[in-house]
Length: 364
Ligand code: BGC
Image 1 (cartoon, rainbow, N blue to C red):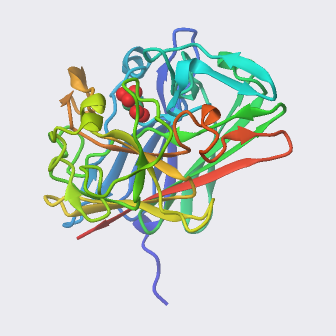
Image 2: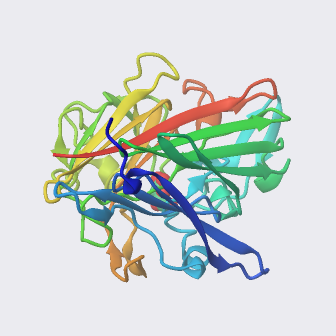
């Protein structure tokens, strides 16, 4: 029998990350899987602050963008949403308005004419209750937040649980669950910005990207889906075979001009609704790091950090600029509450919303 070396055991530790202006303490949990992977998660926004994964030589590097201090998250994360849990509704709802069971709800608008990422004070700015969870092969953190009926003008009390888990095989798993007491809409995601060469190492345009989607949802000039799904074939949106992120990002395609790069929802080639499906695979040629994303969600937003403009300084003191990372936000499609042909985001009190996304890391 081979004894397991002590360092191969996973660990969960906690420190105080900072204090909010009302005196509330924000904790930071550090999860290590004993295999070179480590995640630091904040109770504020359920934010993944850092995520260390080994490169092809086994050297760990932080592959997500973030801030060094709580003050930076509070003051500055309202724009980029680095690493945060997004809810109640990830992505946009046109004009912040939707109708459910004959009643029209008006959400605050915070992105041109639309509501983005849950409104003025979404789940990314809430304090989550945290509970470490572990079994023999995993270490994790279960975060819970109860959103009051009418918060941000959404109907229903929404009890939300998000569980982050690190496995021994270098996966970060995110499991989402939500229950409501009135019919409502829900769309949850995590907004991590990845750069597999390392946070602050420059742009990620040389990363090779594959997305398991034959179609995407083209948008109007305010980034609301036009309705019909469009084939990616023959366009810069086609990642059914690997292309670098940067190869076609400056093409004169009207959709790329609207988004200032990629900022679009892909319709995943799912075998059946809710089936865990490979969504994307990204490879960094320099470090050899590979990330595979799979999800039970029907869509994924590819956002290539188009609006980072050099005004934010990240975790290790480096300035973030356009294209320095990419997001793969697994989700239901934008504006689903107003788009009857899209998979529904309605949640009834008799139902439980569940979804799972896995970010798996290897090297090549
Ligand atoms: C949106 C972008 C937005 C970014 C940061 C993404 O999910 O699609 O338009 O700029 O989040 O807020």
